[in-house]
Image (cartoon, rainbow, N blue to C red; front, top):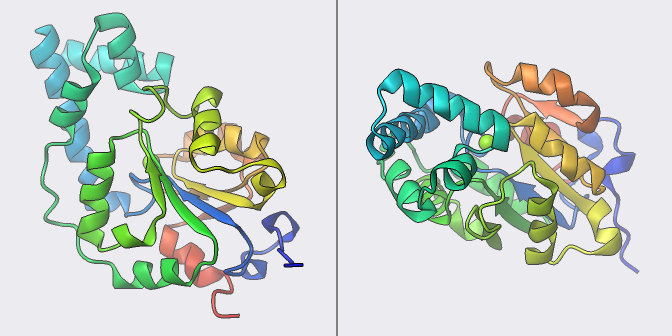
Length: 238
Ligand SMILES: [Mg+2]
């Protein structure tokens, strides 16, 4: 019988190997690529413009509404749908309709991903179109088995536990396999439901997300500066 080491037994990153998990699940934005590239900032500006246009609000009021929706619902879109009757597809098309010429093919990341045994998935609160746009730019699309986007969870975002239930159904992760699954995220609160399901959790830090980390650190197994640091710290070649 195949022996699968679980990450739960790993006390240090270098105890993790390419065989440690059967499922490797990755958030997309600011997890697979570096926040300093500024990609998400462009999307963020378009979210504010969308609200200004659709609801005829000045920038200041649009930003205030946006913060309120995000805080209340965990995702601005969710709040706009429920309270302002916004059409989710027009919102997603608009906010992600932006080119990312600064993205480059990341052969190093691709090689790391290639070495992993098990299945690899993307689980994002953004749209699949956006995910593929980013992954194509990085040259890593073919490394993943499946993508679950916000439409696929009926617009129920992470960290709502209902989103995670839909995620494990979509990726067919059942029973003991939950414990042989790892999830990578820059948003620490999104790791909490994953940890409660039995996943191992990796937090990707940046200069903006430490407050959230402090509130959720008990649900986090390891933290890394970026995704590639994680792969260079584990034992990928053994
Ligand atoms: Mg993210």
